[in-house]
Amino acid sequence: MINLFPDKHLFLQKVKDKYQRMKTNFTRFSEIVKHISVGWDADTNTITADPDVWDMFIKKNRAYKTFRSKGCKHYDLQK
Image 1 (cartoon, rainbow, N blue to C red):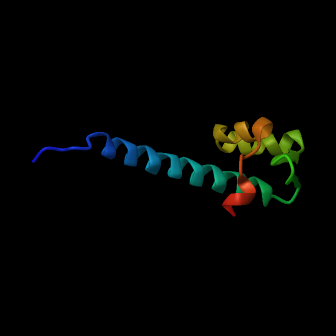
Image 2: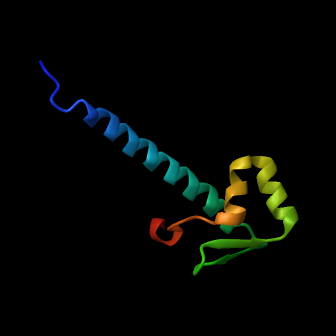
């Protein structure tokens, strides 16, 4: 059998990977937003928190560092 669409599998895998990254980012961002001493600006999708709170999250996982400057794009749409 000849595969007429060899790129179909690669495209599907890219979509699955993207979905998983977005889901992981949403979960991490939500964890920070739910923290007691953290504020969230819905207009800019950014978090305001004391440096010690950021340090705590970054020590937990360095992936949190991205949210400090960039926020979470389309967070409000993912709820």
